[in-house]
Image 1 (cartoon, rainbow, N blue to C red):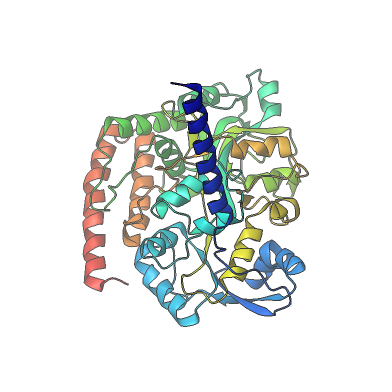
Image 2: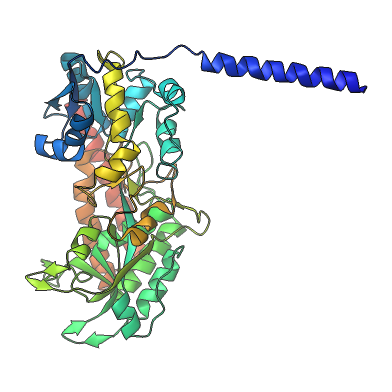
Length: 460
C-alpha cells in the first residue's frame, strides 16, 4: 500500500473518531440542572425510622442540599421482601408517588423487569459517576438482576469474614489463619485446638451460632441449595450434601465446632452463657461485620471485659471459585420510580448516598452496614476491615439457604426438623444417610403442605 493511501486512511480514521467524540460531548443532558434556589420536597419511601435515616443519610445530605426538604413515607405494613408481597409495594408507589424508593433486592428485580424504575445508565455516563470503585462484583450483580442495566444503586452491604483470636493461636502454637482458606482448611485448623483448655474453660476451634448455621455456612459456599429454584422439591439427596453433613457432624462431635445453641439430652434447647469467641474461648468465628463493633469496644460479655488481639481473613472460599464469596447481603437498593416528579433531586440524593463524600463523612452507623463505595483510611482498624472488600461478590450464589420462591410456611417447620435430625446425627442415634433420607421425605411433605396452603389462601 502506498504511503499516500496509508496517510489518507489515518486522516479519515481521526476524523471519524473526532466526530464520535463530538457526538458524545454534545449528547443532550438527560436531566435538567439542579436549581439550588428552588425549594423542593423529596418524597422517599422507606422502612427506615426517622432517626436512623437522618443519622445515616438525611443529615449529611441536608448540609449540602439545603433547598431540598425530605419527606419520609413508611412502607405499608404488609410490605416485606417476599415476591408475593411486592404487589402491596407497587400499590404504595402508585398511591404516594415517591421520588426515591428503598427496595429489597427481590423487589428491585421485580420492578425493574416491569419497567417501573428509572434507568440510571445514561445519567451515570453523562456525569461520569464512578461505578468502578464499588464493592467488587456489586454493580454487575445489580445489572444482572435488572436485565443488564442499572436502575438503582446499593449504598451499603453486610459481609462475613473469618475472625480469629490471635492470642489463642500464639498460646497453643498454631499458625494463624490466612486469606483464601477453604472449609477443609478451616476445619483442619479448628481441630488443632481439640481438647485444649481446662474442663471448666474449654477452648474450641470454631464457634457458630447453632448447628444449622454450620451446615448452611459450609453448603452455601459450594452453591448447594436445600430446595430447587421453584420451591417445589428437596435437593438434599446428593453426595455433596452428604459430605457437608458428615463434615459438620464429625466436627461437632469432636467439639472442633461449638454452637451457641444446641439441644440437650432431654430435648431442651441449651444456650452457652455468652458468645464463646467474644469471651476468648474460641479461636475462630465466621460472622457478619457487626462483630467488629463488639471487638472494638472491648468484647464486653456479661459485664466482663475479654479484650484480646483479634484479626480477620477472608471467609472460606470454594477452591473452584477462589476469587469470589457468597457471604454478602445487600439490604437496600435505592431507585427512582419511572413516574417520579423530582428525578433530578432524586438522582442527587442517590448519587450523594453512594458517593465518596459518604465514605469520608458517613461512618456514624459503621460497622452495622459497610459502605459499598469502600472505606475511609481514617476508619478505625482500616487495615483489618479492608478484608471485607478482597473477594468479588458472587453473581449466582448468595447467603440465603432457601430460594425466594419457598413459602414462609415451610422454612420455620423445616428449620426445626433440621435441628432435630442434626442433633440425632450428632448423638449417633441415626446415621448421616438415615438423617438425610428423613429430611428428604419429611421436607418434601412440608413443601407440599406449604404449597397447598399458599394456593388455598391465594396470592397476596
